[in-house]
Length: 169
Image 1 (tube, helix red, strand yellow):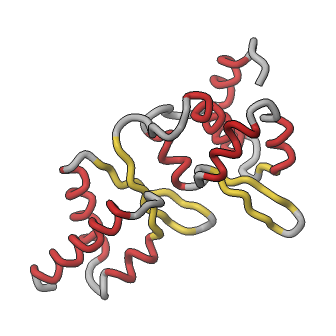
Image 2: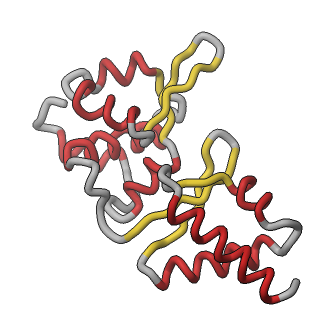
């Protein structure tokens, strides 16, 4: 591939990722922008460009599709500590109890913070409601996973429950 074309594609994808309001993009969409070029080589260069300006590009799966999510060091200022805690508990529940958490179960478990924390997380795409057959489920989005990446490493339900054992959720 000619160097100038390679650099144009890298610049185009870097700019798209930086200006995307959702902070995430499907791998398939990025591959389509590569115009038959070596995707791995291009995404590697994009990753290096983003690192130079203090960002990181992480990958995650959501509903059987691979996503790239733009993150930075530290916490997301849009999320309160309480919302982080709620999100961490939901992530731990989905990892260790059941990946398919029913909305009704979540409403029952998080009844005290449903309107303040869980609704915010859903409205801002950290969590997503999906319907499968007659079930309404909540899934953690790539953005939700990325929000916790630099805050809480290796989330384990038993450790979170230990923190909250004397508190009512």
